[in-house]
Image 1 (cartoon, rainbow, N blue to C red):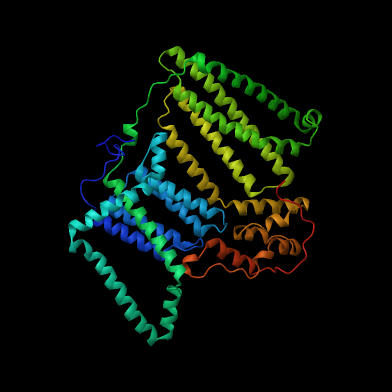
Image 2: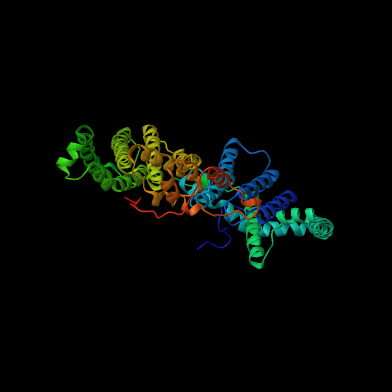
Length: 482
């Protein structure tokens, strides 16, 4: 419970004045952009809505710092995936990543606690901005309401004169209908929801500029209480265990498939599949062990610092080798069965984990890791953006088509589950396999208006113009989830 007279968030005090006109304009512009540009399907409308929202926020906040500009650019880049990629799984993840980057851009955060707040800062700021906005409107009286009245009058004039001109010329009427689709009650509710969320997001960002939180500066770093006798044995046991495992991996590396079949009694592909996920969990859990010990260990004397460097450094280096082992298993596995999107994503995650461990080792040398939490989040966002930008479904389809050309083995059922992103690669297949892989594309229509335009879907249609996709009975399916 908070003591009487003490604010609920003493490190985040509200502004002393009401919202200025620029903040109100930013919220209004962002709300209108969200209402009229965002659509249920992924398309260019989301990116345009994001541009409008960011523009409104910068209109109030002024010229951004380099760091803020990079985070905002990342947020817009993720929104751009809405019209660059067609895969259904890409857009919701990209939208969440965009919201994360945009929130961190405005709220900041360096420590773990600060970054958690940073990820939620714009949302919390949107809720806290309501009394701030109300106070700003009340203080301005009629002057503060004038912009809203102007917008209302403009909308009325647009409807009245637009209707008259549309009735006077059918071509102009068709043009207006293409811009303004038929709206039902559900559509009005949806647009209202998008508009309110966008407006609150912009106002929350403006609120963070007007009342920046001091969560990092106010965070007290308590001295550690774990002594060497407390963590030395557990960490030492892990180091010995990992050393033994790394030794067996070297034997597999030099012994190859014959060694695996002789000692494990399974094929090399089965060996690779059986251990990958366990090694991934080992890498993730070890990161938590290192973070916990580094945070709570006593580091007063040079001897304590040396032991901490040796034990945690050894653990990090050995885990880095385990990450390399997991990647090698995935490589051998895909050589046997081909790539899937899941395998490509998880392999990319392993590469990012390797980068994280390299940063952990670097921070362990100086025993200063105040930069590490934000670096982990930033590199994670950058890796995910890079993976989506390289078009993973197209990469998977290209590889499997090339593999078919060399081995005559292909899983058309799995490839038929991919989106339009993969179509330019799948049209290279012979007629029968192509028809099996693209049978779902026949008579497929997604776009209803220009806001749902998507580059990947556009390219897929162009790729299909020169080939035939016929009705065939597809046999010989084998599972792509091996």
